[in-house]
Image 1 (cartoon, rainbow, N blue to C red):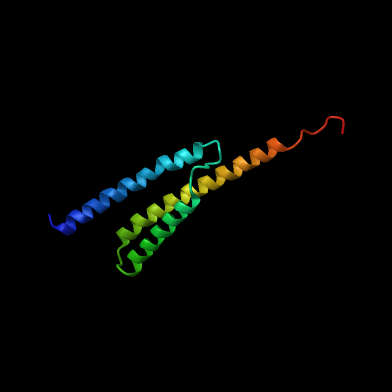
Image 2: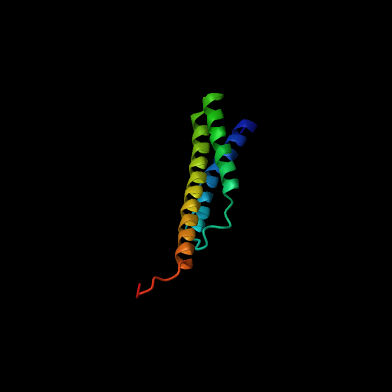
Length: 108
């Protein structure tokens, strides 16, 4: 096997595993009851932009649909994490707002 073939196999295996590795992060954010406060949206946004730019590079500069597909898949996973975190934070903030409202008086 040539160095190019070894590099391609390693890249393919690592990126295939990486796409699956996003699932626990998505699940953890979805199950969090504190608005997914430990998830950095800045970091995941940077990952999203990096993956999208790599997919664009693969298509425009290399005409490599497989490479673009790998990075588009990574971008989709990053976007999913950001959507789940946004949903959890909005839900958490709404619960906090409802809890801080004074109860309605029955005599009013």
